[in-house]
Length: 313
Ligand code: CP
Ligand code: NVA
Image (tube, rainbow, N blue to C red; front, side):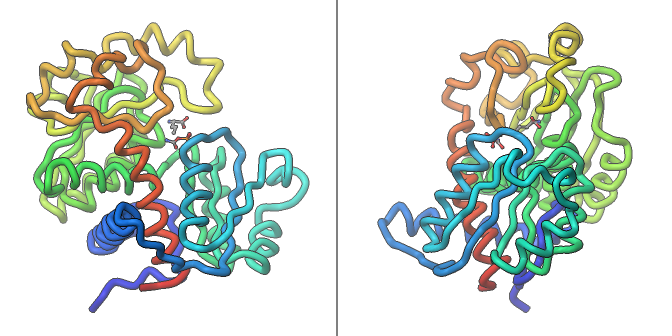
């Protein structure tokens, strides 16, 4: 039976099956190709996306808004001060009210429970545009990028190096679903949540791949087909930045660290990047770097996601 995502919300990639994730990537590829050929695809004409932001954004805001325009719909940006989520009004009421006006809600929030609650109380699909715990939209774009560059996903190995954060968690779930081995390589005390590692490892086992966490750089990066990193202090953790910069130094993705990976290993980063902190500038400008392809694919992957959730196939 064909996959149908109509009416669903995307809070975490752990809730989507392998086939559902692959369907989003296939749809994203089709929409990307059509756009390249200059074809218009107004699949969401007359539909409205509400975008709630508690944190700053370049890629998420612009790719969702541009994506909705390209699909013939409209996007409304709600800045942190516009609705003061949880202060001026409850998450439950916001979800109910926005559902009366809009066809999809995207939210970038601090607490993961906020996006869980939005999805619980909204009667339209809710998309997690980043929470303290997960960033599933980024991983859809990352998987699309890896597939474009490597021609496959299952059986590859991704090494994530740096802070065990929202990116790490979503990568763990995403890799587990598509059968990619993944090792999260972090300084001691900064690993991903044990609960997430255990859940992702169990999903991975069903799909023939290993999802692991380690502090050992050489072992964790050995033979990787893709090396991924992210900022050492995520949004909301700015006060810890200086302390983390000292503790994370050995985990910088530079030429020396890349030497442990496969010689054709992709270099991936969700951006924004702090050059010469978590990643050497030169590595991001090497022929194997796909950082701007990932950023571009946010547009295509999210268009596919919105089409599948809001319009069906
Ligand atoms: N990668 C990403 O989500 O970027 P923004 O924070 O700029 O949206
Ligand atoms: N871990 C980062 C991701 C930014 C896209 C953060 O949450 O700030």
